[in-house]
Image 1 (cartoon, rainbow, N blue to C red):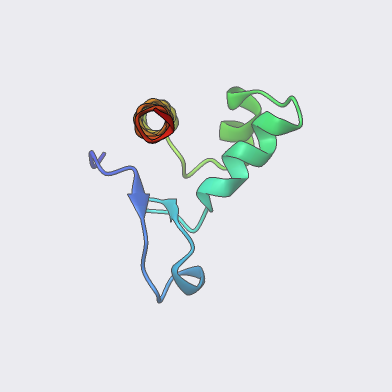
Image 2 (cartoon, rainbow, N blue to C red):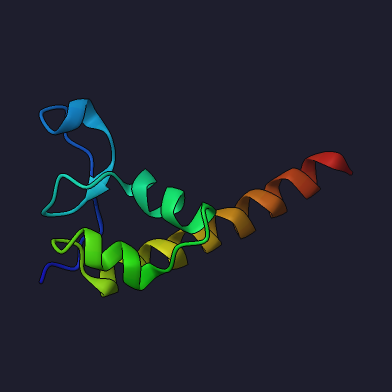
Length: 77
């Protein structure tokens, strides 16, 4: 499996971010989690997505949130 997690290509779903190697929008994972469904349920419904991709995406999201929080806090002071 590739180490890449996300693919953004104007020829795939009009540039919607998808899990690399699939046509599964990244947003679908967050929709599942928002409604209380598990990662395992998501992976079962979207067999082309690998658990490693989901874990990496969540790690990336966490870093983005932490970084954004630091930037916002610096601008408040």
